[in-house]
Length: 350
Ligand code: NAD
Ligand code: IPM
Ligand code: MN
Image (cartoon, rainbow, N blue to C red; front, side, top):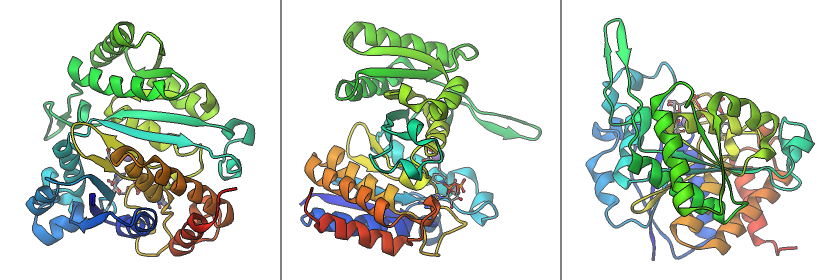
């Protein structure tokens, strides 16, 4: 009986996580669920955005399903010392799990091109995997300070950090079209020079069958939306991957269609890429598809159950056709959409 820890978090997190758990229970009745606190909700309840009792629950966990963390711009959480803020809880969780590779698929399913704001001929067939480094760069481990009228952060990487995430990207590309685009800013940044050198050297040493190219992040920001089909796997550092993946959400049509899997040393972490959406939180209208598809990734990458994962993804595609949510120009609220997914799970394939 695999143990899943759920961390609903803040804003729409609890709403979309409840939908994902409902779907998981349907396709995998043997899973056990244990809910714990993270983010602002955890700070309010326990004085810590990543409390000890949540940490303890991860010791024997098989996979973690996270909602979202963070408050609105005027939230009192944003005035706390940085380590106490909701987002710091999430970063500490990622670190504690050792999840260094964040897989963010960007896919336009057949028949769902109309949900994209791009021309149908551009959106059709898009299937990109963004592999975002998740435990390094400017987010972690470098000098950082805000002092009067001066502030700095440090973007820092080591060769082992670059190689482990690049290996994940090459491994993923081997199961796909065999193409990897490494994204950096090597024309300006030393840290990108190291990144580019190490990714290329690893390819030349161990992954000769992979077609690798290097592109600058500013150019990719344009090309990923104007010619998305040019990409198979994209591998990039933490901050570039954060920004490019929100941008790439334009391709399927919403942040609400962007799931993720964070993999590394131990149990995986599965979460939508979107935030807590304070503007719609509590209204019951959030699109739970990203959370539900993250649950599918949990089954595939966390538990090795690809059939159940495929079953969920097929049901989500059907539900998006029948009952699109408001972020996609439709009318369905969270409950209606989730109901449509549950119905689609019950319908025979074909
Ligand atoms: P956001 O992703 O929460 O929202 C951006 C826009 O997308 C909003 O208009 C929102 O309503 C919409 N949106 C997002 N997810 C949606 C969904 N599932 N269905 C329908 N609409 C959706 O980004 P933001 O407003 O910049 O950030 C809000 C808070 O979330 C901040 O505190 C931020 O730090 C936090 N955040 C957390 C995570 C995370 O938990 N992984 C990710 C990003 C931002
Ligand atoms: C994401 C979020 C987080 C990040 C924040 C909330 C720490 O934007 O998961 O994409 O920057 O990684
Ligand atoms: Mn982000």
